[in-house]
Image (cartoon, rainbow, N blue to C red; front, side, top):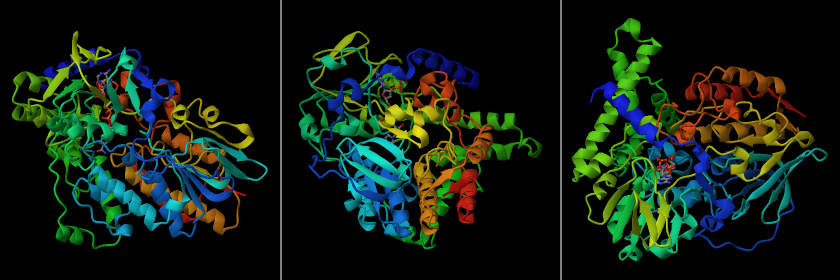
Length: 593
Ligand code: NDP
């Protein structure tokens, strides 16, 4: 297929999937389906309510809360409290224990604090149990366990002007104060259900992949055979990154597994390998190696590579190809944006052609293979990597129910309806992802009230405003760990987390060491930062892409999305800037009192 034909096919497939309800097509669990949010992993323990004072309260016990706690502990700040809705540390890795869950980013750059903890990842791509264990290792090493309130949701953060502290209220009746608050709840922490008619009428068993019910399926997160499914017919709805990882396990266990597909994922080679101890010790003998590795990956992914690719995987492959194409251009054309975009486009077509070719090589049934091919540019949707997913469709147990972009039609008391045919099933598993395009405050589940009763939703009603993506004028002593208005387009999210944690810990340490009570972004500095950002590209992908959460489900961005941008020169420019800013030690643009 030539490029023009491929483009026409991409447009045709996109058209089938566009729908006017965008993000509203999904059901919010907290509204009518609360039981899907229950924690199947850890029992809720009774505890005393807290009404005391801490130096720092952190909302979220994932990587952000762990690394910030570690950095603060290194600086001697130990009066720290983490408020976490799960029953342990780990965040996404606490919840996502579905069989086959693993990290799609190389563990050398994805698992934070490897140097500090001395942990050597067991494989190039770590599996979920190892990552959860690493989270617990960090919490233990930095003494964070007795500082955590698990199974607790923050309901409000309110600045108390008189006492110059934050009041933290929770759904467990806590009402304590903190000099500083930090929010690091991650972008994908609210699971969602598909808006399929009849979902609430199903009489069989059902759950979301982020609340895997091993008491029903048998097996475990380490990948033991799910013996509870050997006599069961199961429907899995969704074929995103989660489904790609759990389908091989369902395929091995179920009597019948119906994989319900609306849009195929692009599934490239995984090639996981055990970590070689000699290689690892050679690569990690220089202090600061992990920072070097993280920066190298981010440089490669943002097209700013210096020609060295330490990680060498499917993520950097696209960047390598792109740079290869640029190198083939005549010297005078190498800075030409149009030529560069053409080079990028042609490497993408090549890559996607290979990925589609791989489906033909692996899947025996020609019709099934055709339906598993992804017709869009690779970064329109989250790229996937797996060596057993496509192979599963060669098993007699595994049936692909492709819906040609329409989705599952209906759910009945006894099964699912696809393309007019009812398939009776015992269990439905929703691999339908997490809220992302919804209002930030709705998703967070709590409001922040700053100076003079100003709420964060009001302050941001016309768009997000921050200084460096970290602090907000009118909200003193409050920080956020997240990439928007900072590194933004970042494939390795932990890179942003470790940098933000360091910045926040240094700011807090500065305030305390200098005997101040508050620090706050000034209006002028925040305005200047917005001015700098105004020239940058919006965070969401190409609107001509097939719908998905990368492009707001193909819908125009809401008016208040103006702030979804990053440093105009990219992630590495931001990291370089913020490093210089914090090392200067005067925290320019923030006022203290
Ligand atoms: P996604 O949002 O990526 O996928 C949801 C799936 O549900 C899509 O295939 C979607 O189809 C499908 N779907 C939605 N509604 C319907 C319907 N009515 N009928 C049929 N299908 C439907 O969720 P995931 O949980 O797979 O992944 C979420 C994110 O989590 C990833 O993008 C990634 O960032 C992260 N993740 C990371 C991993 C890692 O290795 N670090 C592993 C797994 C996930 P459609 O595409 O048409 O919308």
